[in-house]
Image 1 (cartoon, each protein chain N blue to C red):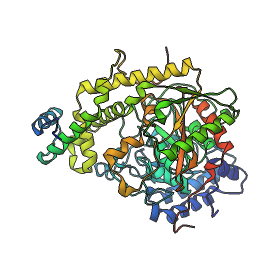
Image 2: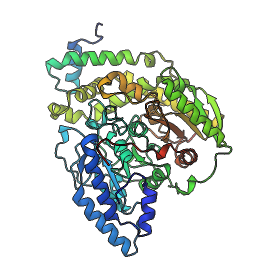
Image 3: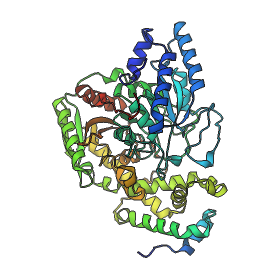
Image 4: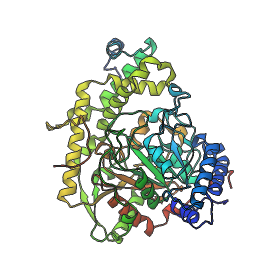
Length: 63
Length: 463
């Protein structure tokens, strides 16, 4: 299965995040990112209403 | 005391109150049980025998002087090794924290100690509670099988009596899962009900300090000591703490229990379904009214839960990932790096979906007049460790527990039956925010009407 992310893309992302990812770990990490992208397809297809993105989580029902 | 198998926090406390047992005797028996069971089960990463003996001696002296701090006074407990202890290292199962000695106790540990509980040791966890490695701990019911995680040591230890109760952490089911697999009770209270100050990692909107015990009443006893606001934790809720033990009384007449279809879909193993449907029948017999309902957004539980879990985990570990990446186990490191690299748009979508789940379950409680939800705790039985494929099996195990981390609702698991191979099955009950008393009351009524909580595993080679 072709990976959605290339090693080069992962290397750039890691550099942006300041993560020291060794060259030999780039491919497994690209595959992990690709697997997660597949895993979350239902979320990306879902029709989500606009609203509170819950940046601060409070479990209480106040409204 | 030679047989700890029948004791609970309540019954041991009654014996201490009656002076027919001392804390020193109880702690010695617990230490002996640890010695007996650890070679096979590996529930502890550290046994604190000397400090436990000293604490037990103090508890006996205080009781002799008429001081009874709480129902936990003199009771041996243990905590997961992600909670700070000032007098023993907290390593979270990782070389990243090798030898780390916290500056103080986690608030939950401090509150247990102030209540007079005796800390006998620290329980095994997956590395940073991530669930990516296979810890040494083995199931109390079949040593070839997965013990549940990440609070693996807690579930196993309470089941075999090498602690009378324990606290762990639960960000996706990490207390309810090992509790269910090992046939004991596990309570995750409302998000913020118990302070997380001194828990590693220190952030995240899914994680909870949670309780493992042999009975619902014991969960109530511990929650009473642990719950409440904490200036050191801004997410700890400043809400009154009711008397959870007093709230246990009462029957289930008129209690409305929702049964969401999500938890009874194709992922649910046939044997688990049979056992849990029987438990639902028992709730009806006790007077509860079951209400079938649908929560469509719960179908997004796993992508939403893993995205938020990974993103928050990656963010909280960024410093260590930069400074000492070589000290992580390779799978844990990759998982956390993945979390640090997730696109912001995806994380935002997950947070919106979480908000939708919360709205949907709130509306279900209100429109159907529900007191609680009832579900299987896990969709499947514990499988042999040799057959575990973590990336595949881990998500499947938390599909039914994670919704209550995402919504922050209180949830408890209680044993409700066994498979044909004798493996425990758990019934999960969840309530509205801060309705721990309701959840405990329903669980207690079920427990008192059945005997599953009285089953004890036989540990090969142990008396």
